[in-house]
Length: 411
Length: 95
Image (cartoon, rainbow over the protein chains, first blue to last red):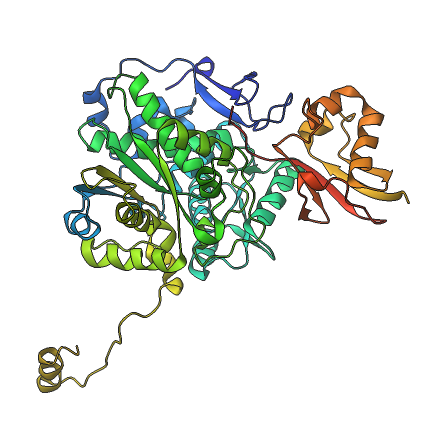
């Protein structure tokens, strides 16, 4: 357990230290606040971590929870890191691993930040919680708030996949669909947080919320035997996951769990909403918001990325790359991942595979690299986006008909 | 022609605006309206909204009738009854 003095919110821009409070914006310069662990227990024994529960909470020293009795734990994290040999051969890279975050309690990586944020909501004794969501965070926030016994309000664009809306509603959350983009939903959520005191996990609880995603980076290095890969490719919307994975690696280094890492952090976005890729590729320090995202990859359709500048800094500092993929490339990646490795992801989750394929083809990623692709959300919640690729036949229940179909290759 | 618009802010900015979150302000352009707020509440507000070069800070978003406004377009004309929202963007970090 951490003591109150061991974590602080600090402004990323001017460095003002706010202590352990519920805030997200600097009152001096409006910069974003982030959690700084003043005392990272160093060194932490690898053995101690390895003996702990198989969830993200095995890295509790890295998570900003002070009162452990407030922890809301549905078992998020410690998802499999799968060696993907068949897919590696297909895309032409030596060593490829899939971080399979479709296997979380609500089937996306969002359970990691939601678990931390709802725990903090209990710690700060908030009466209501909520989120702005492109779909996956809705389910994660709703599930964790139901386990915490907190009423939950979800703000999302009306265009989100039906399964994601239904899932969040089933956990008991109040769903507020907004006629507009994710950015409009986010704006309303910000005003609700401000006026009604709702703990919106990705607005006023955001500095704590993003810490949960560090655990994906920590797990990758632990599952690789406390070594780092050459590259981690990350599906990117707000830039928070990408930044958090990098922060996780940095903190693992500071805690003596890994040697100095030189992992190239790599960003993948859909072409119709790729503000971070555009800024990176054009060498610009300015992220131009995309006013009207034009992509079927709903889960990555954030036009004004909250952690865009932080992500851009990470890409440059780590010697990473950024690449945009068409909707078709994202869907092809879903099919490729499912048919070679048995993992069914949504297009926004498998886009990291499409990115790897493209970067190997154009020579930006070497074939001798050891690569981890983060696969962040399950395809079952986005089946409506996947076209029918094969005709499925209905046959009479006779051996003759079935045998004929198998022999002729028409089954 | 100056018109009257409603300006809404959130807590962090309200701290420098006498704790108030909603204002009726007169001005003909978006820039005039923001300057009018600055005139009312002084240099502390100006320092927080604009950088040394007089540009709106990067992590502040301005909306007119729910449309996000390009910071290069602060000279846009407003109409009577327009609603202006000034929100901190959850962003920043490129030093």
